[in-house]
Length: 151
Image (spheres, rainbow, N blue to C red):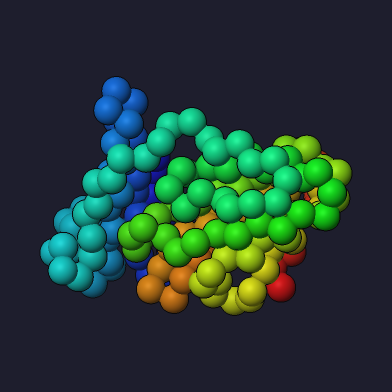
């Protein structure tokens, strides 16, 4: 909910809690606000999103469909993330149990090749763009001091 800036675009999202349908609008400053640009230029997207987070334990595939993944490492684990489903899709991955570093390797990651989660609470907030997954925020929800490392 609310507007956020992403590379010249402001996006606003809303979730219908009854149907589970997410709606995301992208506004470009050249088109003025609060108007939305035509679908062919900037997308108004409606896509069903699973409401429950994915629970991933150990190594494996991070869901590119669910909005959030709660990751439990069972040692030094490798995770993969496929390409997004649509431009503007957001993905949050949070390390909830740490037994070893979790190294996430998305198929397409803008600005690096991996994101390493090294402490409980490490969280990556990603968005799918034309150049791949972009880390729009890397932070720690538990201690506020550490963060995943984009490499």
